[in-house]
Image (tube, rainbow, N blue to C red; front, side):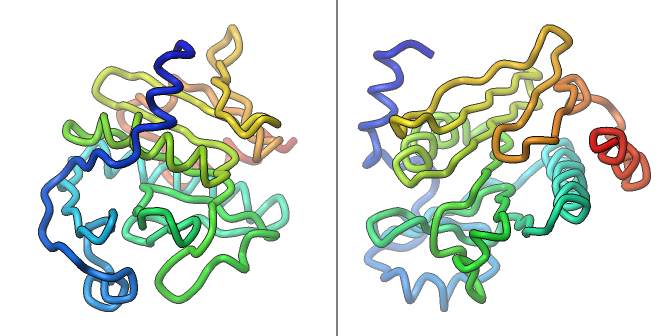
Length: 217
């Protein structure tokens, strides 16, 4: 991503994609009235998210297992899936990331039906209609909010983007190594082959456990 594109992403936050199902809804009413539904809240509007397909669901489940096992074996934390809301601050939209990771020091953000602060790591799996939202709108929001690491995975074309918040509070792209293995910044012992994300079938729980044990050996 070049500098011009990065600036465009960082300043374009008012554009709303998705079907608007309600307007002039307060954040409090959103939490009460739409709890557990596949929707997001942006500037008082409730936006309906598109249904996920089988591949999206399978990849999300695999990553949930991978991240949860990793946390259990390395000191704790929580992995939360859509439709858990994340609202990093009072001037931010309320999003429902596909996956969000809270390390132990961030668990104070977790309330009954929302994360009221920035997750340490967020993963979005792109659906056909969510590419702009994940790559532009949410990119800018997560960067400004201080989400320390952001993965954008696209099963349609087997592409993966990894962004890490720099000391200047801008996202910097991180690339896998020459063996196509990505090393997480937020989860320092987690290193995984990007090719594994596109395997069919994806690893089940037992294989995932062994993968994590091998990382930590």
